[in-house]
Length: 253
Image (cartoon, one colour):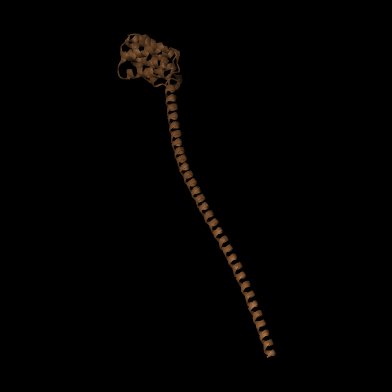
C-alpha cells in the first residue's frame, strides 16, 4: 500500500512537471508568434511606407516629366516663332537690299546722264557732256530728215553754246552741207574752210574741200574751185574725194 502511494506520488509529480513543462512551451510559442507577428506587421508597415514613398516619387517624376514635356513644347513653339521671325527678317533684309540696289542703280543712271563720257564721232574720240552729245545728235537727226533750215539753226546754236566742243569739226561739216542744200554757198565755204584749217587731219577734211569746191562752182568762182580741187588732190592723194576731184578738174574749164 505504501509502495502504491509512493508510485502515485511520483506519478503525480511527473504529471505536474510535465504539465508545467507544457505550460512553459506554450508561452514560448506564443511569444515567438507574437514576435513574428510584430516583425511581419513592422515589415508590412515598412513595405507600405516604401510603397507610399515610391508612389509619391513616381507621381513627382510624372509631374516633372510633364513639366519638362511642356517646357520642350514651349521651346519648340518659341523656336518655330523665332524661325518664322528670322525668315521674315531675311526677306525684309533681301527686300531692303534689292530696294537699295535699285535706288543705287537709279541714282547711278541719273548721275551718268549728267556726267561727261567718252564719245567717238568721225573717228575722233573725246569727252562730252550728255547734254552736249544730245544737242549735236538732235541737230544731225534734223539734217537727216531733210530739214536743212532747222539743221542750220541747230548747228549754229550748238557751236555758239559749245565753242570748244570735240564735235566742232563734224558740226562745221554738217552745217556746211545744210547751207549748201539751202544754197547759202558763201557761209558753207566759210565753214568748210574753217574745218580744214582747224583740223586738216580730220577724216571729213577731204570731203569738206570737195564740197567747198562745189560751192565755189555754184558761185561761178571757177578759179577758186580749181585751186581747191588741186589742193585736195595734193593734200589727200589717197582719199576717195581726191579721185572725184581729179575727174572734176578734167571737166572744169
